[in-house]
Image (cartoon, rainbow, N blue to C red; front, side, top):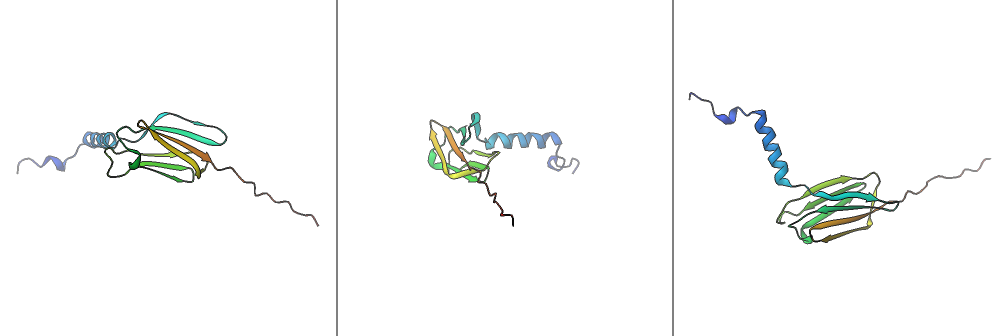
Length: 120
């Protein structure tokens, strides 16, 4: 063979282009607006058009919130947010309306573990 196969010599530009396409096709969930917070909760909104609420999964583990669509969804979204304070999953709520996922994430209130000692 006079010419080696093209696939053997991959150019760095092709790798960059393939990474770009992979990121575009995965379509991560993008915040619709900046996150807001008060002393009790964080509020986040994500644009997720073309998906039904049954196909969205939200997981909370400590300060990390993971949002993704199930495999059978019409579109694929995936996103991870790490917040500065731990989240209470029991007190948090999620609402999906008109293609916008709105999360109200309750902060875990710190509990003081300080103890007083008696001086003998």
